[in-house]
Image (cartoon, rainbow, N blue to C red; front, side, top):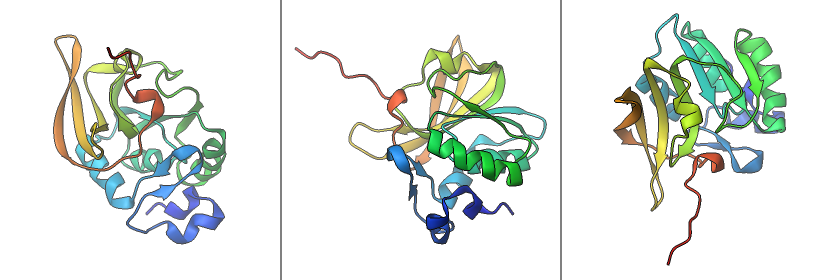
Length: 185
């Protein structure tokens, strides 16, 4: 078992196993334990695969993937979350390669068999889709315009990543994965 409280600030340790998202600085959150479990089940990690975790936050999901035998590269852009992630992963996920950089344009080299996005998206940028192996998959929560979200699995087909809905699931929106507001006449 991975100590979830190690991935939180000391003031939040009592919330580690609560069935609710835990708010972090910058409007982000660590998803509830059941949410993380459902997304990882949907991802179907296979030992020996290479995975990219985008918006890894404090690193809990990346550590769980590593425990499944997957080689993990995790990207986070928030300095406060990176600080917690470095300490937590040193103890609970020492094999995770933690990278600081923009979420929508991860500074990593693919291909990856699995890309897990830990937050709500409205779109998948080409910069992320291009990191996916030909037989790989993307797991994320697609935000709905009216609120809420839906867990989806995306697979490459005819040069594009096509998503199939799996189940309803809330997620904190990731600003860099939202559709920019456009001019409406």
